[in-house]
Length: 151
Image 1 (cartoon, rainbow, N blue to C red):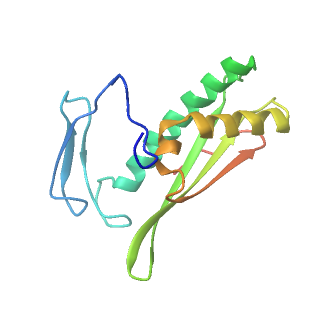
Image 2: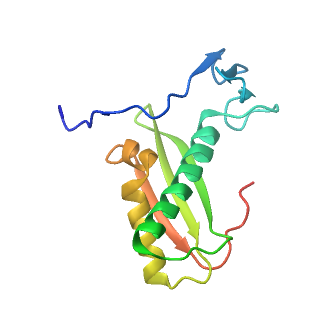
């Protein structure tokens, strides 16, 4: 390790994308053709998405997988309707752009302490959480019942 950065010993997968035009009317597509999106700036008119939405989708799906791994490691049976809602804010401070995020996890039928332990363990395990650790403000929350679908 150099400067606290962990080096990968074995690459398991490499995602490749090609983007043109940026967030203001651009497009982005993956090399395998499975994903192609139009891009628009956050809050702009149009039918495109933006990098913050893509981060929220990627992170929440990875975080849910990390919860499943944590549950298996601690022998906790997860409910079928476990869900993660991610909110990623784009903001500015002193003229510079920054991100912050909130992850809300619904684990119905699991007691609050066990659910919190799963979320904390998943946050330590998830590669997205590791990537942003110490770089952006992240709040994880266990919510009671089902999480409402993100709009």
